[in-house]
Image (cartoon, rainbow, N blue to C red; front, side):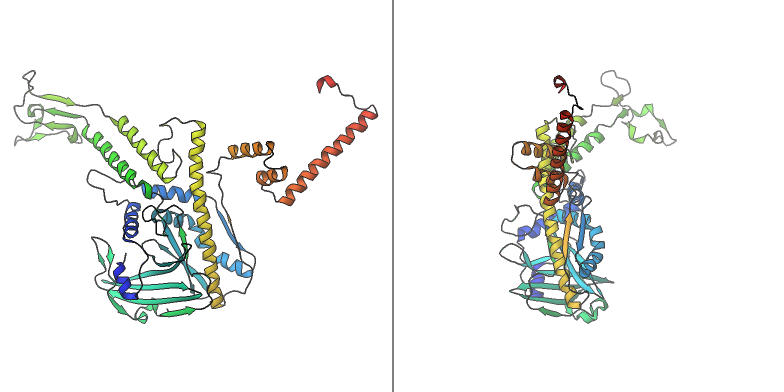
Length: 477
């Protein structure tokens, strides 16, 4: 990451990120890469942050269908987003790992490409009153030999005026390994780098009503900096418990290692070479511990021969580990059993439902945030299409169909729907709309057909009884 002071000096723009949030984002990045600050020789990382982010991405994007339709322009946008849609799960995982991610479209040739910028490489500068990001700096890096070239691209939307500024820098001190801080170095011309030669140093648009980038924010309350509009990692409220889990895991490994079976014996029991050194059986060196010459057992007075094989307390460690993991699940909004052992604690049916509902609510919120980010991305792509006259004007509709079958209890949902119908809370039309996914017109038409069939069958029975052709035994009715 780039030091904020360096950006401010280079562009004269303040970064709208507090020191607490900057530190948290940097920490989440390291946790996601399984490099948290608490690791040591005895404490190994379980990679729980990556597992939590990956699980949420799977639940959010499971069989999602995203389509842009309505015109030739819409078909053009739908085609250029094919690669983006194919990688959506990965992008949602990155967003979950650090609290958010930016999608920045840009024109290239006769099309528009989408650059994906993860948190830590996107520096917000301004927000509006609703908390939406209206200004940001996006760095791009090129390494050639020992030199690091950095391009800073600054976007800002202010009262219908949109500006884009590009500046380039070169540094021979690319990265300081201790804190991974990128030094900007000396400013150079964009033309000095072949890949940036065609980029304009300054662009200005008028009558702008949207940013030319989209921000996918994880919709959880920011408890790191409540005044910050930035999102937080999906595991931000479980950092301490994740550390506890890593430490308990390390203690469990030590329990196994320290309780390994060993044979402690005096040197008299071992073969020796010509120099008198003990020879241990090949492949079994870890099993035997020569104690030295003339070592005797205090109880018997004979040469020492002791088998060390204590009981392993693995069950106690695993029970404690599962308790910690369940705390992680609760604080992250996941259902019990997602990471922990689902058989470790017996739960009632209502507790299972409540646990699943908590997970469903979190996933649904992220889906809504993702859908809004995609719609914002399509709007910004349209601006570049108009700028380059890449497709004719036309209607553009974005549809996102989220498959919730993995996170919704369909049986429970149907029972609740039937109970609402029986209680008169909803009518038959609304019941069919929710039960079968029909439109209001389709539901009404289906109910009319059913009613017609009932009436028609009633007439047939009445006529048959009047003609004496139908006999019913009332005792069997």
